[in-house]
Amino acid sequence: MINYDLKKIKAIVFDVDGVLSAETIQMDDKGEPIRTINIKDGYAIQLAVKHGLHLAIMTGGHNDNIRLRYDYLGVKDVYINCSMKINVWSEFLHKYALKEEEIIYVGDDIPDYEVMQRAGCACCPKDACSEIKHISTYVSDVKGGDGVARDILEQVMKAQGKWVLNEKAFGW
Image 1: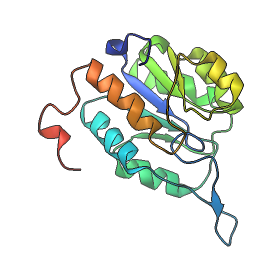
Image 2: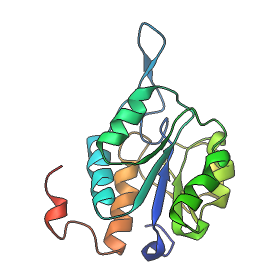
Image 3: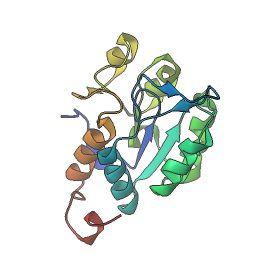
């Protein structure tokens, strides 16, 4: 369980590689990564959006397929080619008048470190690097790409009374 007051969470920000997709990625014949997706993560993401949580993606990846995937799920804030995530952090907070303590950031490696130190609640998958685990409020029992978003979003929505309670839970 996440040891944080999840009722005050208004936004969750996710890294992609190693969090929403597995840390080992195949490459196509042009050298572009072929990322994995987890269907249960997708369900939880679209449900969280329907319930009014602000979700964002911040990734150093630059493939437009990332934007297409999360646009499809209703995520409005997809920051790709974002190697310095702290540079868009303030923009995201300002856009929705968020306080840092109202945000969960989910990362797995050193490029996430700076932003995770600023977020109210830092979370990571089971296979995150040791530096990230050390600063995380919560280390999920699952690896990146294996449902870590589902794990965290389900806990948040249950704490807020938004998990599987009405017609928003059914259908995509």
